[in-house]
Image 1 (spheres, rainbow, N blue to C red):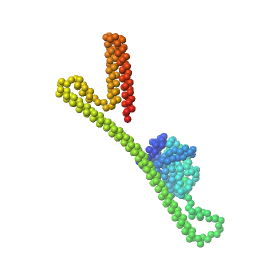
Image 2: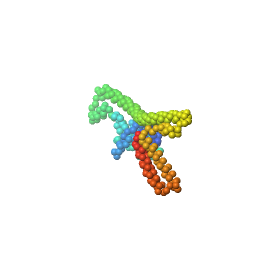
Image 3: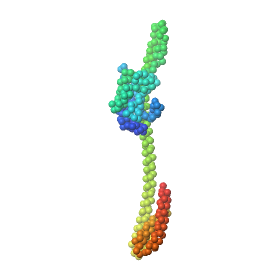
Image 4: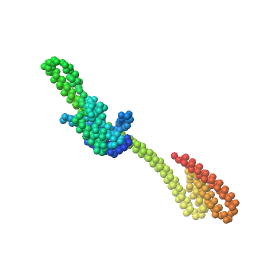
Length: 348
C-alpha cells in the first residue's frame, strides 16, 4: 500500500490535480477495501476529443449474484477537478464476456448510476460509489458470459423438426452434456486465472511506474550532487592557493621582522622597500587598478589640501592646480572603470 501511496502522490502532483490531498485520501481508502484494484496513469479521450493524462484504478470488484460470487472488471478514471466532479467508470469485459446493456450500463460499458449524475461530495466518494455499484450489479449484472459453440449449435437446431429419435441419440446427448460441462468449467477457470493475472499485472505495473519515478528523482539528485562536488573541489583549490600565498607572505614578514630586530641601523627607506616587495599582484590588470585607485585617492587629498590653504595661495594659482589635478583624476577614474570591466570579463 505504501507503494500505491507514493505512486498516487507523484502522479496526482505531476498531472496537476486541483485537490491532490483529497484525491489521494479517497483513492487510498478505496484500494484498502478493494484489494483487487490497482492505480495507474494513462491517457483518457473525452467525448469532445480532448485528451488528458489521468489517474485511474482498474481491476475487479466482487459481486454476489444468485448465491454465486463473480468478479466484475471495471476501470475508474479520476478527473482533475475531483472531488468537485464525479469519477468516470467503465465496465471492462474480457474476451469471454459481453456487456449486459441496462439503464445503468451503456453499450460502451459506461456506468450511468444516479449517484454520478447527482454527484455530491463529501456525502459521496469513490468508495461509496463502488459500494453502490456492488449492490446494483448484484441485482442486475453488467456482463454475461458468451455462449460456447456447443450451446450455439444446440440453440440453432430447427425447432420445426417434428421427429427426433431420443432413444438412439441418448449417448450422443450425454456426451454433449459432458462436453458442455467441461467447457463451462474450463471457461470459468480461465476467467478466474485471467482476472488474477490482470490484478497482479496492474499491481506490478503500478510498482514499476513508482520505481521508475523514484529512479528518475535519484538520477536528478545524483547530477545535482556531482555539480555541488565539482564546485566544492574548485573552491578548495582556490582556498589552497590563497592559503599558500598567505603562508608565503607570513614567512616574508617574519624574515623582515627578524632582520629588523637583528640590524637596528637598517634605514626606514630600505624597510619600506622590503615591505612593498612583499605585496605581489599576480595579474597586471590588478596592478593597474591598484595604481589608479591610489592616484584617485591622492588627487582627492591634494584638492582638499588646496582648498584649506586658499588664504595662503592666490585664486588663480588655486584654479590652475585644481584644473590639472581634475584632469588627472578623470583619467585615473577612467582607468579604474576599464580595469573593472576587464576583470569582470576575465571571471569564469
